[in-house]
Image 1: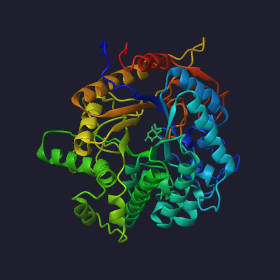
Image 2: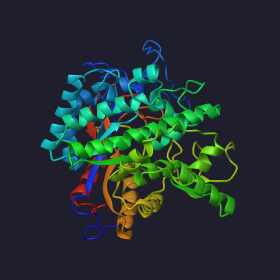
Image 3: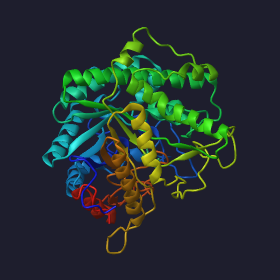
Image 4: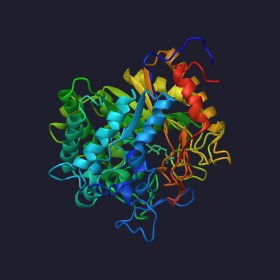
Length: 486
Ligand code: BG6
């Protein structure tokens, strides 16, 4: 792009992102309770993770117990982020660090103190925190005793947690995201990591082939409760501090028709609806989409919607939209079970893919930004985007992650084009700021970071931090506000 003047607005929020259960470690220290991810074993491409009811460290390794040890290294990490020039650091608060069981009378002071120190450190370095309230980390006790989000009582427990952190960090944090990738709630994966409800296999799979109508119904009921909780949090956040801005956080799904057959085009439209707009309409327009009733009927879904719920949704619309963007997929009619199908659709034969089979599609980002903006006309923030790759450290300590630089460069060009199209894009936080555990596979070797952490899949290593080539490259991008992409 190398234009002399930037198209990125002044104050554009460049930065990086992580999630508590993937980076903090220290899973049971200073009063923290277990979260659902603390019960998830490691895995890899071929071997899906397991969720064990009892944590059995003799038999299994649980990667969130170590993360990249940010709990111990947060000062060093934030100094590195400041050196990269981050304007914002997107992180999540671990709910079970604040309320160890989720239904405790009073919050855990040590947990509150930890995040206070972390946010103060960010502010000292001119970094604004962008904070996700729950990123796959419901307290395990709420899964076991309440059945997770399918239980309406969890709404009030979440509100108590939200009120605690909104009050505690008033002035330190003003940009909040409620539920990470809430739209995964329509499938098995989302239900496991937000409610601990396991498919029969006990494994973390995206889709559960054995799901019954009852299972599907429960998932959509849980989502309804998350919507109500989020809408109430929006109101609460504005009451506590009018400076607060609250966004939804979506997994950005882009579906193209695999062919121009009208049936495939219609399938792509249906996929866009259920994967994106089911949740986004509720959170951004304050109501379920007009086609929701048809969808519920076709899938045997019968929701319990309390009388006041519709007005709660209407009064709790988010201020902005945040989303992750990694890949695109293709839609083809009548292919629920077909060879070659990915978890989400058909692979796109026109695109290259990562070693984990995730297509690389920068142009899809421009397309999706325009789709979202046209529909909602709310400010957009990309809060996850990046490439997972195997990487090694050279004998001299350097890490040459050219694939990441190429990936980011092309996505930045697409973002610049979308901004020129007129899209209001306010920020970008790469996934991930530093190497952390993969949420999907539990691997450490699926590395996303700008900063290398010397550790392996079983938690061995020095956890020493080293800047990768992408760190220096991104530093130039930020300091030139997106002009210098060379
Ligand atoms: C997003 C999640 O779905 O994708 C992150 O919000 C996750 O938590 C990221 O880490 C990348 O996925 P994975 O499975 O490669 O870690």
